[in-house]
Image (cartoon, rainbow, N blue to C red; front, side):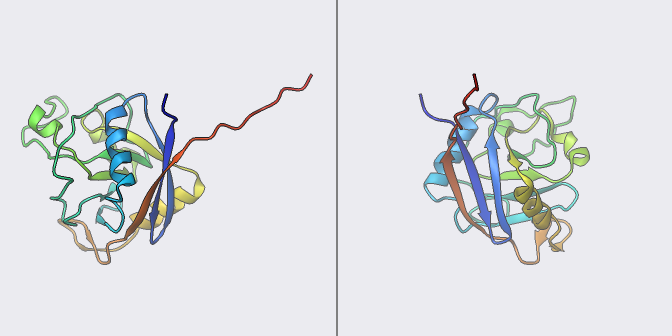
Length: 184
């Protein structure tokens, strides 16, 4: 059996430790881990920053249109898009609404781009329509996320940052369990 893993997204603003939701998105996590281990994310940027919504990265073109050259199937779940939640970006179906889920060609269009939620209230509209696969954990990661989310943007339509923050490396590490001893 393969050990559980976690990630560290290192940026020029600091590190964010990420716990994965293996129970709801195993294939998405496998894809993210594989890309990270190949160095795909190293040197990319967060090309979109909506200060009251999400930050988005993982695009080699740096404009929201790029990917790894393939798509993965969606793994929608009941997990909510709260602050610090990682979710896969995908193409939006023009006919999509809360009552009308995305058609398969749109739902299954994710590849490498991901976003991290900054505000649970504004991100709630994404629930059940995007693949949630992890969460930023710990106070240092939360601070880094907040710092990234507050960077100025030069374009209010595309939410392109004035100076797009760099993803220096995404590291994948095994979860180590701490042994506890009971006293007799």
